Image 1 (cartoon, one colour):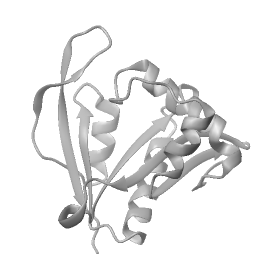
Image 2 (cartoon, one colour; image 1 turned 60 degrees about the vertical axis):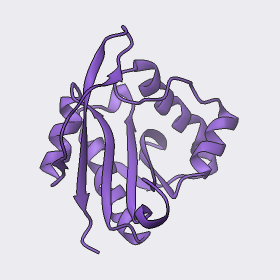
Image 3 (tube, helix red, strand yellow; image 1 turned 90 degrees about the vertical axis):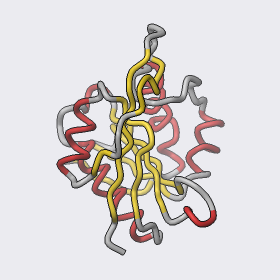
Image 4 (cartoon, helix red, strand yellow; image 1 turned 45 degrees about the horizontal axis):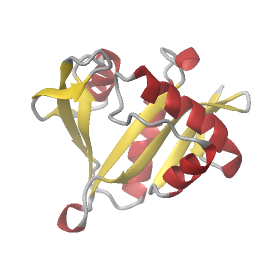
Amino acid sequence: MVEVRGYALQDIRDMADVWNEVVEDGIAFPQEEALDEKSAAEFFAAQTHCGVAVENGRVIGLYILHPNNIGRCGHIANASYAVGSTARGKGVGRLLVEDSLAKAAENGFRVMQFNAVVATNAGARHLYEKLGFVQLGTIPGGFRMPDGTYADICPYYRELGN
């Protein structure tokens, strides 16, 4: 049974491990630097909300939620999702996205926008579309892959109904 809840300080090490796995894969996140426990604690604390997917007491996935922009665009949220490789394909991503949408609305956001979904990330794209996100277009060569080639990115958005 997987539970999604807000993170706690004791989750930081597991959260950093899951986050770093996605960063090191190099095919979904723009970040290139791994988080250590100190930088992870600071990074996650700076978010509007962080949710964790927990199974048998261990963090297997997480999301960060924050404003996509400031001021007159501060009502638009952005989120990033990370699922550990051993938990992929089991619906954890969907639980995280659904929880983030609810938390975004609770925090007064009106729209969720994803700026840089890599076109080759078919699983994420399928999930977002299934959950009502709309692709805004394609940015050719917007993401540098680990081998130095470039992949397109696809921005997505969804209204939250506030």
